[in-house]
Length: 131
Image 1 (cartoon, rainbow, N blue to C red):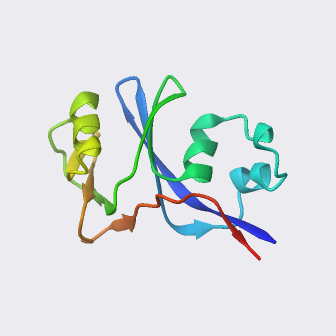
Image 2 (cartoon, helix red, strand yellow):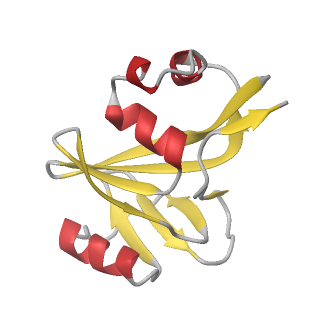
């Protein structure tokens, strides 16, 4: 039996971290090694493990999970500097499953319903067992 988990993309927004698991799945790496022991306690880094195991978009504050959302769509990266969205706007958009964007100094991430260039499908499922 093999284990596969989504690739997780992290984004820092003030003192929050947004973790977005994306497809395609990966079958190797540190998180896969920890999870393959079949003991959830072996995966002590919630920031890495929660999105990998459970899927869905996680919002962490100081490495503590505060919310999980499902978004049926894509995470798209754009090389433009956009208007920085605050965490309350992001949470509001996610709770309504609305498209939104959030920016860093060099590029912008957008949650989109339809695939565009430089997009990854968001994974709301998490870990899979391959028999």
